[in-house]
Structure formats: C-alpha cells, structure tokens
Length: 221
Image 1 (tube, rainbow, N blue to C red):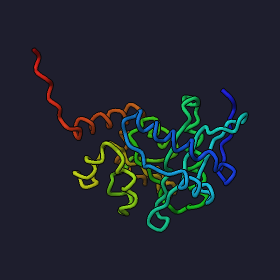
Image 2 (cartoon, rainbow, N blue to C red; image 1 turned 30 degrees about the vertical axis):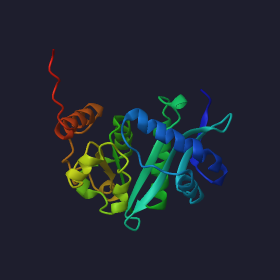
Image 3 (cartoon, rainbow, N blue to C red; image 1 turned 90 degrees about the vertical axis):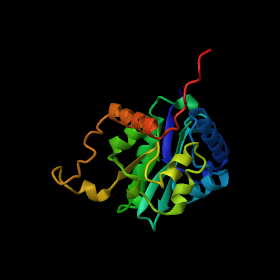
C-alpha cells in the first residue's frame, strides 16, 4: 500500500469527485443501507468552500478517503458526512484519519457548534466515541427537514417515518463543546453503559430485533 496524505480538499481535487460519488454508491449497495446521495457537483462545491477532507495516494494522486462538512440551523449543528474509503485502503486507519481531520476542521470553523452524526456502522461509532462523541436521542438532533432528507435513500427509511423520527437502526451521536468544559462530576452519565464496541454492538442488535419487520419462517415440507 502506498502512503497517503490527508488534507482539506480544494479545487485541485475536482477531478476526483466522480470516483468518490461512484464509490459512495457502491458502498451503500454492498452494505444494504442507504447513504445520502450526492452529485459530483455537490462535492466540488464543498471542496471549493473548504468544507471537505480528502486523503490522496502520494504516488498517483488517486482518491483514498473523503468526508465533507454540512451545517444546520444557522451553524448550531455540524455534521461530518459522506465518509468513504477506497476499498484498497480499508483496514489501514484511513477512515479514522479522515474523520479526525474533519472533526478538527469543524471545531476550527464552528467552535460553538454541536457536531453530530447518525450511523449503523460499529466502526464509525468507535471512531466517533474516541473523538469525544456520545450517543444521543434523535430528539437532540436538528429538527430541520433538510437534515432528515439524507435518510430518504436508506432502505430503513420507513422505520424512521413510522416512529416519527424518534428511533431508527442508526445510532445518533453528538459532540457538545459545552460538555467538554464540564468536570467529570458534572457530565451526564446516562450513556455510561456504552463504553466499548461490544456495547454498541449489543445496542444495534437490540434495535434490529425491536424495529425490523417480523418475517415468519416458511413451513418445512
């Protein structure tokens, strides 16, 4: 594997937007879950605004990893969205490096904003947890309809709608800068049981049993 560089994307990376979008679509198909569909033009817009992080191969300049920043409710909420890694570079810490850079950029540009995310990926939950995110209820996420439109392409969107956005297979996570300022004694410990990957896995399995449609077994002949 070649070495790679993680940096804030710019206009010099416009030609990689097509391949990034393609990999986003292929990854969603492979996982069987949705991802907010974005066009190459949208990704280029994020690059030109300095609101995207890209990892590129140091030898041929190809796309290795990508993520972009979105804001909601006048900048009160920030999401690091569209995390994707080239399949050839998975399992090498690219996702963690890209997310860490996106988190750093978000804190620099929006220091008072809450950084949020929703995901079914245990790996992403672990990365977020290491960055200081905590699980949260959907009621703590933006009420802006545009935020939830990104879920419409997900195969589990019906769960979100029939629960009136109260719960889904995704786990909501949030980094609150105000919580960082608190002492350990002052912090809310309602999620104290979620401390490692096994806990996140148990939570995911519980929600799947609770929310997925029941499929009766076929009769044996």
